[in-house]
Image 1 (cartoon, rainbow, N blue to C red):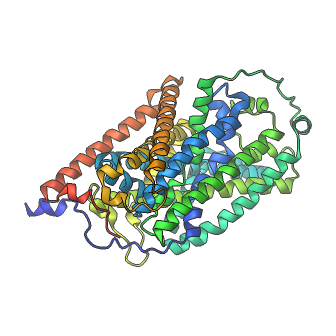
Image 2 (image 1 turned 135 degrees about the horizontal axis):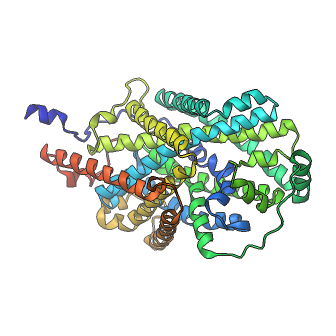
Image 3 (image 1 turned 30 degrees about the vertical axis):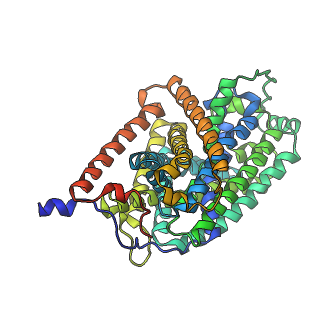
Amino acid sequence: MTTETKSVSTPSTAGTGLVRDMSLMGLVATGICSMLGAAINIIPFMIHRNVEGIGPYVLESYLFAAVPALLAAFAYATLASAMPRAGGSYVFASRALHPYLGFVASFSQWFGLSIAIGVISYMIVPFLRDICVAMDWLTLAALLENGTVRVLLALAMLWTFVSINIRGVELYEKTLVPMMFLMFALGAIVIVAGFSFDQTEFAAAVSAKDGVAMPSPIDTPFQFGTFLAAAALLFSSFIGFDSIAQAGGEARDPGRSLPLAIGIAVIGVGSFYFLFTAAVYHAVPWEYIAQEAQTKDLTAPGLLSYLLPAGAAVLIVAGAAVALINDLPAMLLAVSRLMFAWAEDGIFPKKVATVHPQRHTPHLAIILSGAMATVGILGSHWAGDFFLGVDILVTSMLVNFLLMCVSVLTLPRRNPTLAKAVTVFKSRSVQVPLAALGTLLLTGFLVVHIIKDLSADVSAWYFHSTPVWLIVMALASVIYFRELGNLRRSGVDTDELFSKLPPE
């Protein structure tokens, strides 16, 4: 009996060991750096491989995808103002909706984002290759094409940032904030360059360099189903602001700084996305992008390098590499705090909530999240197509954001005390229609995405993201019900546990 009791996960009743040292700038950088990266440099162009027939409607799909993202951001800001704790999305849904749905939603998020970290690590290497090509370092560029080298380099970058995250918030901010400003400065070169050239100049540059003519113009009719499928995929570009909520246990003045940081990140990044993507499509015919995407991994810097001198081309490729690299520490922070929050509540092995006594970071949760990201690297290499990881991420985050909107609707009934603590969008006449519209749109996006995934022609069932996601959810359910049973057998009042916020 004694041995059994010692092995049971129990919720924390003391302080967590985390410290509120993260500034507003650090929170904003966390959200922005989680959003910018593959989303802006790869997906708007490689989408022609994944959603054939989208043709000239990529920008319109981007704008439409922003609507449910803004509604999800509203839900996060509302809930974060009342429940500023580590592992935000888990805490929000478990206290406002149901603990099982909170765990499933956040486990889905943890899995999807952890895999995405691996995918991004894997995708950084082609950008380094493009820098080598621009510098005429062709031997090194050829080496980076080697599969083993690519995997080893991706792993080295991933675990470097695992180490930075473990060492504490101060080093994390000192690493992330300067790189965020550098990323915007280098990305601005793409915007200026894209609007400075036209498609005729691009055609001449490609012809001179590669001896290739542009494809003939294609009259592509608008198809609403294809448009929705593209928008559902491009929705992944707006994923990342949720990382701010996960840092709720380490934010200074969290009731104010968390909602403000979410708003700054979503609006700032959304505007930058549109200008960036519009600039590239202004200079490069979509027909060429669609054709090349079928056989190559395209990037925005790679496309514009035809129009720019070598020095400028190196700068924009470096900017893209910085944007991708920035994803890693920000997303690692987010996913590790989810694991920490589960363990603090006792629905995950308690040891995962261990906080380093000097660094004040949940080091074991960070390491475990890095291990799952390693699976993402190996999976991307094995599958030969990073879009499997993107599809898993989109499914996971659509479910998560949907439940956040539902949580806004159910919070007053489920937990009236916490509902009174909301400090932004306090009026129910504002909360209800926005959360209901978000629920409707996100449900529609989820249905469209699942249909597209299940109807895709792939070589094996496990290259469909939906069954992979369902298997992960089954695993999450087993973990949840096992740990919940342990809590109840150890005498914990789980109703009371999930009616209050975790300790600070």
